[in-house]
Length: 146
Length: 146
Image 1 (cartoon, rainbow over the protein chains, first blue to last red):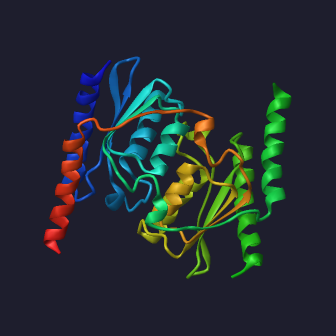
Image 2 (cartoon, chains in turn orange, red; image 1 turned 120 degrees about the horizontal axis):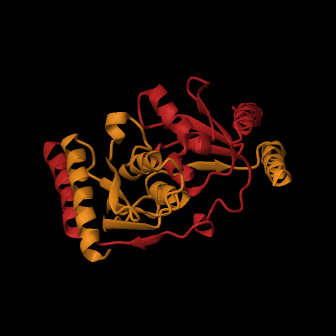
């Protein structure tokens, strides 16, 4: 599939963006395509205000829906189309989901750095031994089983 | 509230991590505290396998639950405690939610770079004019109303 398909799928994402705008949400839309089956498995639009949920970006809702459709969190055969360049949360989610290809429309100069909007104070190492110990115990157990 | 409180809240997050381990999930736990009210408003643990959802990290579930509890996506008076250093998706979500303070336990040397695990092909500029136009139209409309 080539550039023509990219435009066709982006057009569907744009329709989702329009649906967001009609709900007075920032108009961003997303579709996820199963390349093997050659079909759209998830469509979503930004619903942050409607759901009062800071994680309810179009991509996040679409990724969760696509995983449900595939009955797996691994979306290795899938491409994601989104009308706006993904923020770090959504780019991170796409990587975690092992999405093959992320195709976006408009660039977002602010996408790369959420800290421009809000700076979170970050503190590490609180009860690090206990918190790390439960993880190493878990992975040790996994290796023992294999 | 000081370091004693941090340990007390991290201990609750650890309990959540234990609950994840009991479900054979990677044991990571999270709690979110409303500092104004001085109480825990959300507890969650990693449920990626159970929910078959790549976005179902402890922090993401907790942030969505906290926003539901506060009836707002703005968690400006909230601190997030998590047993493992957040990945970019979760760190991004905390920033989007305007969380005041993220406190973590164990460090994760892989946290900073999801690309170590999986490299997503990124393509930008597909139908950029249409995708950007719907956004600028939306924001122009917002300014006109004010």
